[in-house]
Length: 293
Length: 312
Image 1 (cartoon, chains in turn orange, green):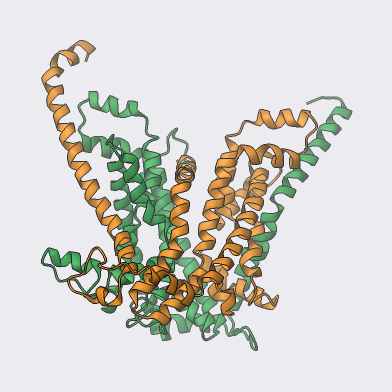
Image 2 (cartoon, rainbow over the protein chains, first blue to last red; image 1 turned 90 degrees about the vertical axis):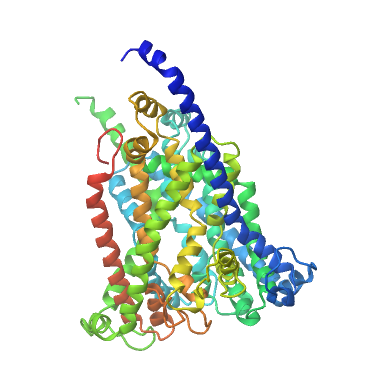
């Protein structure tokens, strides 16, 4: 088929096709707006409930906008749920987690990406396959190990393993390092730099986007960690926000206004993080998608 | 290869030096792997043949734990059934949902950026707060879900109160966060070369054929990866059963309908300290996951398409 025949036969066909495409787009936009409303409604419901009085929550049909705005629900939840203490604990755990993960995983990933040594391929595939081990399979013996070490009841089981790398993050950073040209490393070597210097001064700054992805991922993980603290922390003053919220849920039963206020306070930092660093959330996905392809 | 010996020696020692650097860099992972993964795994394999209770006893009991598991523990089968039900519904639904969403968002529509943000947002949230939110939304009388259903004249089920509806309720909650996978698919959809679509259009292919014969094959590697990770993580569902239980003092309630495999294992290990038995359960789970992954991998030869033809 030559170019001429397409152009000749195509004018009216092209027109109808364009209108068809337009209709498809309009329908699609309407569907997406509808879905967005469904996705966002729970958020609004949460905010509205957190500001209502218990009496108004029990009303039928329910109201979309609180008739009176009870901001004091937040103060009550904050105080009654000991959120100040739990926030500090969580921030501490997340802080240590982010530092340890960034440090260890960027370090280990550099070895896998840029240094040739015998057994590298084998070790790397072993590492990848550990991602498939269900975490519960190692959970019980790890607990036994930590209890024999006398670490149960301390933060050590929640913080120390972070310094030894985690497979997915090593994988992610390694993929990113692979995209950095080797010439750069060779040039630095000629200038007399060793690998430690190259990693700390050259690679970390270059891998900033991937490192931010790892930091966000780790922060999220630590912020939402429930099982770890549930197993290893028993003293209430050492609870993190997840455990604190679970306890709060037990004491407040069906006082939804307080529960929603508490839940919103726990979710708010993650939502804020998402809006600030949205680019990096997507970046992380792109690195993953690009490499799994 | 006949280079002067001195040069040869020098390059050899350089190579060795390079290797040492390599091992130094990966050593934290090697140590972590031995101490936190391989060691514990082997220990639990041994423990699964004992009556270990962490404090006093650790006697060899042979296959007794496995025998109890398969023949004398009704809750084991219940928990396995609950988990399989969840995986069998959740994996296909979230996969289809996020793929469709990604295809829709890959069109050139004004405001696409905002849609992407909105759909992705729920998937970054997790933990107890989200569970509490959904317990409220799924409240049989005042919850938003049943209120919305009543607008259409549908009388919604009792969700978290009715043992028959607790797992569908959890899956509904998971579908709210379907945007997480969407973003991964979107990234891979954007990597499909535009020329392929143009060529197909010239050949007169319609939207559906283009989707089925170009889009789907091009993104099968990501699809495959997502399926595997979803399967593995699906079998690990735990927290929902613990936190969203009707009675906070009895995880998995009502009527053990949310007693997932890992929850049962957790309760055996950390409530009654039957560590040996729990280890046996852990190894059985490990075996299930490995077999399913192997089947997935074997099947992937028939449908996963790698660009460039080398079956990586």
